[in-house]
Image 1: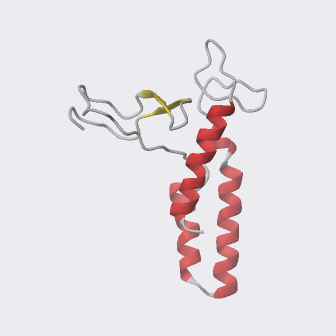
Image 2: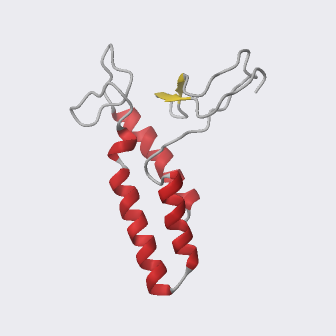
Image 3: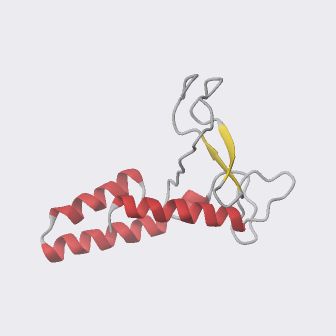
Length: 127
């Protein structure tokens, strides 16, 4: 499994977990079963899957004496595999204002559901 494939699974997991959450009037983050967090905890909840992916990649690296699997383990460790979810936001028009890293963003998913996130980088006017 490539890092790109892991990231695709991550985006789908994020969208499914967001779509399946039951928002409260004051909640801004997706629920985890019956727990309503007051911060973004879903990435922390997926760290165990990252660890499992790292362990499998290291085992395959050792079994097949293949540095590609060792490299994959490093990428999952440094960039996340299941955790550190992200999505690509497509704008109909360029940004009319600048957006600072960490700014809360609300959008509509391809299936019409509301998704929440934060800007990953600083974005300038016209981006």
